[in-house]
Length: 219
Image 1 (cartoon, rainbow, N blue to C red):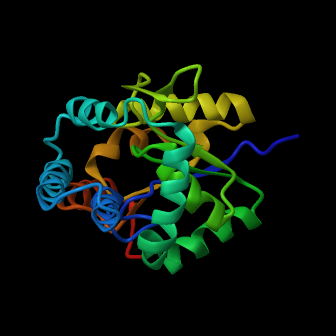
Image 2 (cartoon, rainbow, N blue to C red):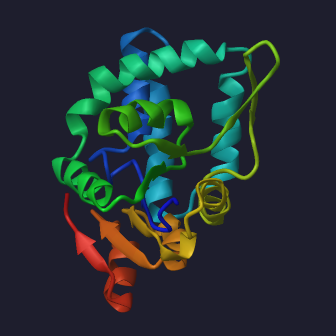
């Protein structure tokens, strides 16, 4: 019989010390797919995200449109190379330890991130996390991206929807789970679980954590 508990982990600035969107654009610059202005645009979006004022749907639509027609296998291969070269050095040791503690308890493990699954799966494989809950890109019958994300995005309340689908599939109770995150935008899911753990929080989430008495950790 499967356990009714799960440990859910955000990716950017939680399991990984950096936010991965700018790391990916830096990678794209090294392979000739992006220019300096692309990096500056992503840094602007990341700043808005940190402040909680970004229009996530608009940013996602722009990102997905750029991938229209790209084979899914191409993006998966690029993300594997990108992770090895740009992301792995920033994986948090204390995050690894937290994953292992929950594994030792026999809990389900999942990354729950607003990024795409192609960005999150290399990290999941490295940490031995079996499940990834992410913002899913539409793929056509020929295995190419359509240029759209599937609804809902794994962002804000959308994280609850997508995490609940995993809970129903695996048989754990989302309300009895633990969720680790750095971002105020994850407040809906943090409020929803039994144990909210705030890691490297932004200023608004740090204030909220103090008000609610949530555990705060620095990884």
